Every structure is written in structure tokens, then in C-alpha cells.
Length: 334
Image (cartoon, rainbow, N blue to C red; front, side):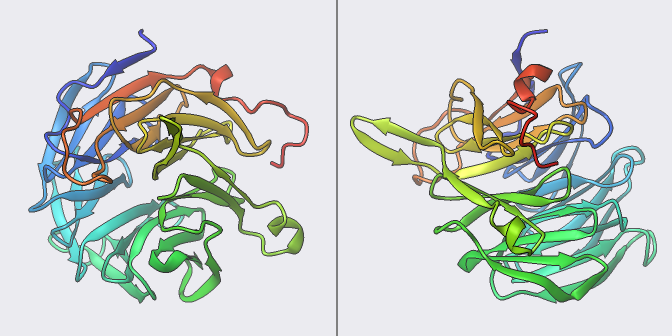
């Protein structure tokens, strides 16, 4: 197989999210501003199913089995079962549903909205037509990104707020932090080992932070510059739109509006590899569960307003085990 190939029949508008199935490495889900959520078989390189919202879809994620969750500008939180065709609206936010993640530990969905709330949802309660809203939790600012790992929830908001919750007790905030990054947070992603998270900003930086509040752990946090280009002697700084941790090695990839994808060894603070630039902004990244494929959404993110741009495309890059490994074993903090 080629090191990289393009996915057939991508969406017709900006791509918001690409996400692989948690246990099926050939299954990829894609949400888009064309109002669709589509399922693909990347081995056969074909679209296998699709459903629609009433407006642009801003995020999607897998739940149990072939259940998918999605939300966007129509404010609806939707669950669609690709294996049965069952489709229900679990409820709505008062503004756009910007971000979501499924908690396998608790078997419920967590959503973040521009209405300054976090919602938790269970499709199994409330009857087949409705599902159930387990709780709505008010936050100080708009939610931009969130992620879960085990029982922890990390929420990145406007105003550089980063709140950490225990999913078993959402009424209390575990930690209230100010982002290590000086500018607006674009994305947050938890480490696979559950020890912390990485966040990215609109100003070409990534921060690596740890949950443990002890001074020793907090001393390990750091931030670094990335996704910057020297153009005619001027440093152009681009938003970092996407972060994706490798499922086994703990290294991570970042994607920016410069069209760049870079692999990082967060333990040893090293850049492992920089891939050739994609035609336009990288809006989303996802690893297959076996760590062999990185899905890259090349899709203009309108950082520079309306302008001519390359078509919306999804690339599947084969990544060797060697490419994704940390540089050295010595000094790794597992």
C-alpha cells in the first residue's frame, strides 16, 4: 500500500472532525460543514453510510459499538447507530454544540457548547425516541474543546480557562487553571496514559500539562512554538487546530493552519518528524486504534477569511512503528 492516499468521496464543505473507530482500524467517521456525518471503510476506500443534521456539524465521536454522536450549529445532540439506522436527538443546547467526547468508563456522552455549558447524556435512558440529559453544568465562558480520559474531563474555554472535572462528581470543579498559552485555546487532548493533556492555541504553540497538582509534577509542564513559517523574511504564525496521541507509544501529532503535520515526543521534548505540507489547513487528525494510520483532514479553516483555497480532502498516511516511537527510553516518564 502507498505511504499515503486520498479518501474517495470526501465532504462537500469544510471538514470539522475525522475520528477513527476505537476498535476497528478500517472505520473512519467524518463530520462537516455540509451538515453530514459520514462513515468510511478506508481499506476499501469507500463511503459506507451517512446521516445529516439541519446545519453544519462541528464535532462527532464514537460511543459503544457502531453508535455515533454528533452536534453542531443546529444545537442538537444526536445519536445515530450505524448498525441499525436508529437515529435520536438526545436533547439540545441553547447555542452551537462545539465539542464532545464519549466516556467509556461511565458510558455517557459529554458535550461542550457556545452556550457556556457542559452537558452529559445517556441514550439508554428516557425511551427509544428521546434518550436522556443527565445534567447541564454552567461554565464561565464558551466551550471550545474538551476531552475525557478515565474519570477525568478537561474543558478548554474562552478567556484561557482550563477546568478539570471528575466525571463522577460534575457539580464540583476538581481544578481551575489558566492556560499556559497566552492566546485563545483551539484544542485539548488527553494523554493516553491518563497523566495529563496537551493543548494548542491560535498562536502557533502547544502546551503539555499534568493532572497531578504537586509541585514536582507541575514543574514538568512546558510549552513550545510550532507551525510557524518564514515567508520572505517574515515569521508567519498559524493556529494549531489538531492534536492526536498515538495509541501505544504516547507520542503525538499536531496539525496547523500552515498545512503542516508534525510528530512530537512529549516525554523527551523532541520533534520526531515533520511531514510534507498539505494543500491547505489541517483541521483535524486521528490515529487508527492499531496506530498504523493517521487520518489528516486538509480543509481550509477560514483563519484568513474568504479566499480561494484548495479543495477539502482527507488523506490516510501509513505510519511505521519506528516513526511513532519516542526517541529514547531513558528519562521517559510513564
